[in-house]
Image 1 (cartoon, one colour):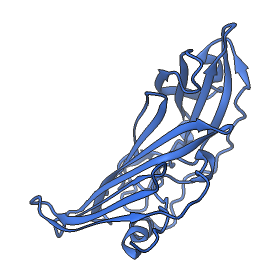
Image 2 (cartoon, one colour):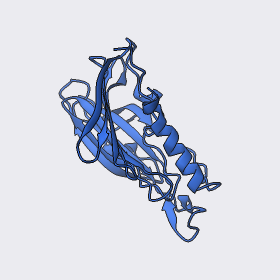
Image 3 (cartoon, one colour):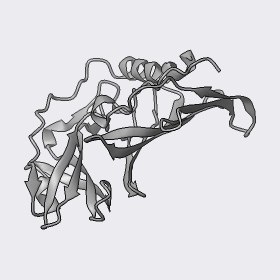
Image 4 (spheres, one colour):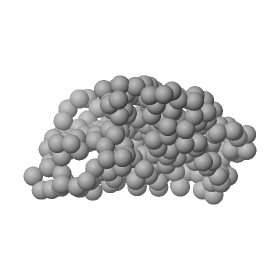
Length: 240
């Protein structure tokens, strides 16, 4: 399954090759309050609420919320070595999920600043697309597109459910294409049924290979253990 793990390595190598020595300024992530009467109360000073989704996540029939917070510090607008005259926004994000309380207000469920990666390359699109809550499932979409330094582009979809005191990964989908060759690749994983679909093909819609695999039996992975959502390695499947 080297094809799966190759995507994160290609992205990392492309970023390093195109934008050497231009790491954005270090940041300190603030602590998020444990509870608040309003959603605005979970937004630390110097941060803004960029995106919000609402819905019942813990099956108590109350409207919980997923918040994407974006730091707003002018010092994190930086110029890269590839084009010193063009600045990009390297301000990081946090994904904050809160549960509604029966008596009013909200309680913090999780705060994570790794899953939505910080933009560190002026040639890369901002990776964050959207956050959603549907049918008790928390969903996050990211994408990769490099204007220089990488041919591969694609979308990443994550699905989480609240179980055993945490948001557990139940679904992962990645669809990509190499713009220089037209090759396509797709990985779709259902961690509840322990099934993985791996497909490769071409931009013309043809499919070169399509295989289903059985995943090894493991505890569901917690959202806070995934790290960078663009560099996540799916589980290796058992032999079919």
